[in-house]
Length: 80
Figure 1: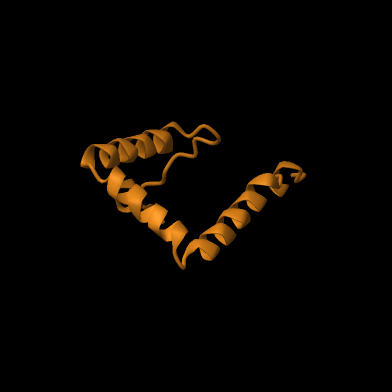
Figure 2: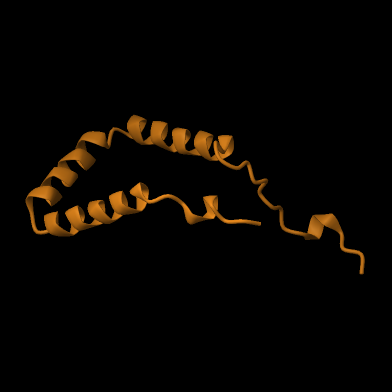
């Protein structure tokens, strides 16, 4: 069965570690956020959250994130 390439969804090319496309998109979204003028408002919101009832939940989320970051990716040692 012959499929027309136009009918197939486009796949993103895997750029691997150092994905330039993702880095460019991230940088662009950060630039737009800074230019939006909302940085100070969001910083105040974060400060308020840390001083309020959300502090415990935020600290737990931070610890979980740090634990994940500290562990080595098991895929690195995987034999193919």
